Structure formats: C-alpha cells, structure tokens
Length: 508
Image (cartoon, rainbow, N blue to C red; front, side, top):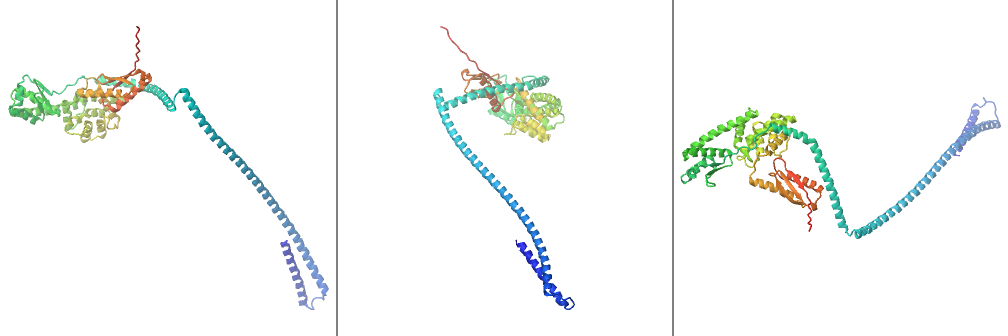
C-alpha cells in the first residue's frame, strides 16, 4: 500500500500546482483575459484535479494489480520451497531412522559373532580334550606327529621332483654333451701316465757316499751351496736323495751329481765346473723346450720370457702330471671344445697353454695362488685383460667373464680327471677319502659309508628301519650337494645310497 499512497500524494501536488498556475496566469493578464468568476475558476480547477485524480487512481489500480500478482507469485514460490524443505526434512528423518536401525542390527550381529567366537573356542577346547582322550595323545604329541607326517609327505614330494628334474636335465643335455666330449677326447688321446722328475739317485757302491760327503763334509757343503738343494745320503742304502722345492735346481743337482759319480772325481773344483756346465746346458734345454711347445701349439710370436717359462714346464709336475703334457693336452681339448661351441679358438688355446704358467714361479712368489700369478704374467707381457681372465679363472675363485674362460676350466677338469693323469700323495689321498666318508656319516639314518674307486664314488648304506625309498633320493642329493660345496676334487664324485632290508628266520 505504501507505493499507492506515494502516488496519491504526487497527484495531489500536481493538482495544486496546476490550480496555482491557472490563478497566476489570470492575475498576470489582468484586464486582457475575460472576466472569470471565482466559482468558474474553482470549477475548472476542480475538473482538472478530478481528471488527474481519475488517471492517478487508474494507474494506482494497475500498479496494485501488478503488485498483487507479484506477491502471489512470491507466496507461491515460498510455499513451494517450504514444501520441498518439508519433504527433504522427512527424507532425512527417514534416513536417520534407517541408519539407526542398521546400526542397531550391526551391533546385534557383532555381539552375536563375539558370542559365536566364544562358543567356537569353547567347543574347540572340548573337542581337543575329547580327541586327546580318544587318541591318548597330548596336543604337543599330536602336533609333533602331524609335523612328522607333513615332513614325510614333503620328502616324498622332494624326492619325486628331484628325480623329475634330474631326468629332464639329463634328457636335454646328456646326449649332446656325450657326443661333444667323446669327439674331443678321441681327438685328444694321449698316454695315461706322465713321466716324473728323478729326485732319488741310485749309486752302485755305498762307498761312493763318502766321496759325495768329502773330507769333513766339504764336498757336500760345496754342492749344496752351488745348487741350493739338500743332499740326503743316509736315508736308504745305495741311494742319494736330492731335495729342493725349485724343480730347476733339483734337476741341475741331479744331473750334476750323476755326472760327478760317473766321472769318479768329486772335489769342490770339479763340482763347481760340473754345475756351471749343467746350468748352461739346462738353460739351452729350457729354451729349446719352450720354443718347441710354442711351435707345436702355433704361437711362435710369444715374448722370450714366456718362452723360458714354458720351457721350465718340463721340470714342473702337479700331482705327478707333467706340465708340458698337461698343457698340450689342454690346448687340444680346449681348441676342440671352442670349435664345437663357436668360441674364439685361438684365445682358448693360448689361455690353455698359459693357464698354469704361474706354477713355475710359486717358489719365488709366496702367498699367491699359481693361477693368480698366471693372470699377472699375461697382463704384463701380452696386455690382454680378457685372456688374463680366461687364464686365472680356471679354479673358480675368480669369476669367468667369457665363454672362453669357462671352456678353459672345463678343459682343465677333463685333463686332470682322466684315469692315471694325476697321483696324489698318500696323506692327501687318505684325507680326501676320509672327508668324503665323514660327510655321509653325519646323517643319523646312515649305517656305513665307504669311499671307493680312489674317491670317485661314495657308497652309503642306510638303516632300512629308519628310512624309506624316498628318503634315499633326498639323502643322496644332500650328500652330493655338500661334497660340491665343501670338497675340492677333479672330475666328479658319484654318491650311491643303498637301502636293503634283510629278515632272517630259523626253523628248528
């Protein structure tokens, strides 16, 4: 209503202003205007005012109608929003009730589950007690029995898979490996027993020992001083032993001693001249041997120092195996293997030739394995790191970085493992055989263990009442694995596990 009142006030002001304006005009014109009475002027003003009032009322009615329409719309919108809010509130209330219901249900279910757990634990305890009474076993005893059964099943499973794995490996590799190795070894056939250095010299007459010793021992002292060896004259009848770690000195002493005994003149001057001549002749023989080895293997361009080292192979032995024959045999085997496998044949043959060259210097360089010395020699004179690795990796303590290095290792094992190639000392042989037997005897189910075929096979006899046939497979695998990890030996060691049950009854 406030807009309507404002409009009426405006109209009233307009009417008043119009009336005042008419009066003003009439007074200004004075006598010029026709004479109008006050009633007429008032009537005219009244008519104008009525017209304006009617028009203002009309506009006010229209404005009122518009205002009412807008108010109705606003009221309708408000009612609609109130309805929506009411609906939403009802929906929220319904949802809240639903959540409360679900929460209560979950709480009830949780309580029921907790009670069920308690019931299950109680029932389990009762069942365990009943089982213990029925089986006459405690929980710990039953658990121990179950573990034993599971372990037995696992052993059977392990034995089965070990056999399957071994069969698969052999099926894939055996045939090809046999043909390659047979072909290589056939082409590399050599004599079985290598020659040995003579360190014991037979003398025809026991009286010659007196000449070797000389007056007050002057001859033997001069001989030992000039050769650097020890002479043992009283160890055995009609024999003199030359003892020295350096094979070259030992060879010089042996040759010189034979010449002196043959000539019959044994005195310091003759000893000095003879040793000097033998050393000169031996150096020539060393060079000649080194050149021949290099020529036979196809490496004529080797440095002079390496040629001299190769020549000393003739007087160096390892487990009774001469280094000349061992190295030449390895060159042949390694070359054949490299050709079959598509490797660098020349590098393999050169590495096989030089792999044991450090053995001629082991008495000069202490505290360093011979294969490490061999690698240092190759680096010094040939300056080839790949070749040096192939030379020094053949004993497994240095990683082989190429297929050529692996081939050298295989060739060395083949050459050293064939029958008659090497001879161990009696003490070393006993230690190795005893160690193999001790590894087998440490298992509780083993009754006896015997190392046979010079330590190439271990035969293990198990207690039949404490093991099954499946256990024998697992035991053989364990013993073989431990021998691989703890023992050093050429070739392979076969492990045979025997289980035999004998029952004897007597009829009386």
